[in-house]
Length: 358
Ligand SMILES: NC(=O)c1ccc[n+]([C@@H]2O[C@H](COP(=O)([O-])OP(=O)(O)OC[C@H]3O[C@@H](n4cnc5c(N)ncnc54)[C@H](O)[C@@H]3O)[C@@H](O)[C@H]2O)c1
Ligand SMILES: N[C@H](C(=O)O)[C@H](O)COP(=O)(O)O
Image 1 (cartoon, helix red, strand yellow):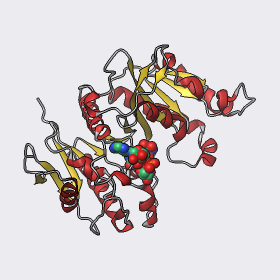
Image 2 (cartoon, rainbow, N blue to C red):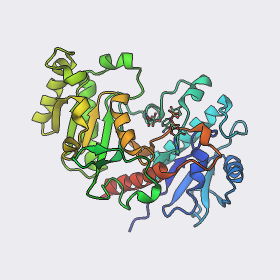
Image 3 (cartoon, rainbow, N blue to C red):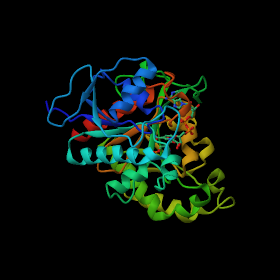
Image 4 (cartoon, helix red, strand yellow):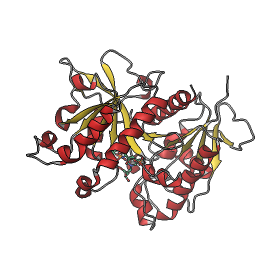
């Protein structure tokens, strides 16, 4: 059996809950390496009152069971839980660059990211819209696709039901699979990512839509093992434009692209009204939904599975997953941050690594 390289976890914003969550990975049954400042982890462990044994990571030394393997990247200034400091924004990006470099070289099999704070990175004078765009730039990838995966619950009448925060124990051994008859997996991808709403309509062009769907098709096949993904596509406008009476993007841009891809063998729907697209009877028979913008798709996914969802970047030459939540500054150092989404992100990354190799 081939031994897989470890996954690398970036600890994210040092004032946020990322370091708290990473501390909970000591003793994890998968080989993991955390990239963070060592003293930050030790200080946070002391604040939380948890003992942790750190191991200094070196590529040529084996990881040690029961210890948290840490690849040290120094902070620029000591970090305080809950208090943002733009002096440490370059540190955050250094941890990401190191992870990318390790994934590209094969030192790591994939990367899992704890949350960063986009605002403070910009306050440091560094334009930054998100990991997704940053990783595309770092790997020279012209287009990537953000896709979140989570679980929905069927209600009595077969409708999606609120399943609140999923504790880590609830997550099944196999990631990306429903754990009971009442659960279904939701994969929600976005045609545009961190874009102001005002700019969305102009960004939905035929080449963009076509390329996004090609990336989804390819990655759902090679990294998720779905031979012919069934993709439901949300219209941009209310009621998918109501035959052109409520907007023409569906007719002018979307339908021609979807027809073209269908003729090539893609299993893609026509533009569907987004308000009913997420009803359980529709989701039951699909592998992924493509929505047109961030807050068309993500609120639905997060309503169903916040705290247990996973954010995945499709189209990269490396494997990257992430938590579904942000830095939760107010919880840093309190012991109240839940680790479920990070554990699930690790499982999904492992499964993607395995799928890609089979
Ligand atoms: N993957 C990422 O890097 C990522 C993802 C989402 C948001 N963000 C960034 O995080 C910052 C804060 O964003 P926000 O306030 O909108 O969202 P948030 O997810 O940080 O917080 C939303 C709510 O969820 C709670 N929460 C979040 N994570 C939790 C956890 N693990 N356990 C328990 N409760 C948790 C918070 O206390 C808060 O009530 C922003 O800069 C945003 O851009 C980063
Ligand atoms: N859009 C993501 C979410 O709402 O969960 C989040 O902002 C993180 O995005 P990046 O992975 O690009 O940082």
